[in-house]
Image 1 (cartoon, rainbow, N blue to C red):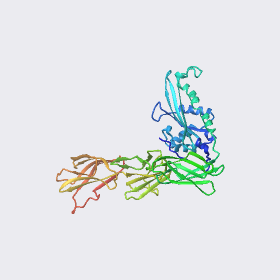
Image 2: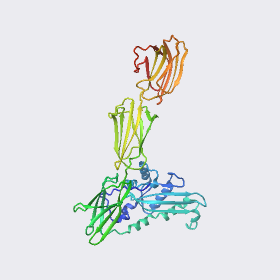
Image 3: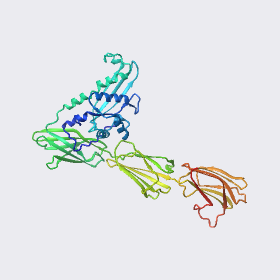
Length: 503
């Protein structure tokens, strides 16, 4: 994953030319968040928490204020970050905003056990919390074989005895920061504020950059911002000290660093400040998907008995500006809606209620889920569900057709979800079996033997739908009926019907 930038340079942020080398003040730099180190010895997304805690101890010895582990782990959990070694700059800035850490340390460790051949090695990257950008990295390694005599102590008995020494020798961050802070700022100007109208945009959308410059002497003759291969001049907003530049976002997706250039034509002096801000172009819709729980799926349609659990997710780590979910009935009318600014919720539950919190009837409904990223790209996912909150409901009739008797077993109008299995046994009043049959779908038209004297039959019936609702009946009397002329289509009328819930 690349480091895609997200910067919130607002009025309280004081930037000087020193920011080219260091985007935080010394006080902020003394607060550091250490993310759990990836354990490459195990592979995958394994973490080495004991090693991470030793890293924190070494940094405390150097005088750093270390963000508590529980705060770091809580941030990772809330933002669903698993691969900690590849923290993107958007989340790095977010971690800084929530904890005040001017520095963020990410890294990985590899350990090899063994009394003689044991070894441990690690690499790390230091991120600037204000900008989210990496600016320093390092590594170190030590083996049991090579440390005898170096430590000046007894021979170590395991790699756990050499970790602290390894870290103290290769993680001297305080010396690194002291060297960086000795850089001198320019005496020409100070940029005290950099504001972008949008940090994530689509291709072709306008991007506005506004800066406030405090000139220590004569103002620069020309001020430019450079974005990719485009050079855009700033226009002064009167004598306020503010300058404004507007351009169209480039067509290619990706992150774009902004550099600033100032020219004093009379003296020939120039000042170039690199990577003081950054924006990102995203043209593709968010890769949105939703999973439905507590449902049974058939033919790409999901059936639910009472409530449905909806789990939305994105297949990348981009941030969202808004999401919404609507429930539509079979006629396309909206019966319920919810939504919120920000990222997706972990889950949603729809209990079959409408906007007025009243229960709605069983039937076919469509879940429509929309999500917009911060660039305005929109995704929509739709799923159809069949809601069957009432018990299983079927109709059984016995009719004469062309002087032959038939049994008709059909779903009642209230039965929305399909039947999964059924069985029926028809008998004469004397107990002789006329029919014994099973099936996995309805309706069913079952011919009876023509005895010439049947007036009614006794039936044992068992029906189960795909949600597990079951209906059982024993010895039900069904009277044979001759159709009246003219024969009309069956509209659901039967000699008897039943509706039962789960046993």
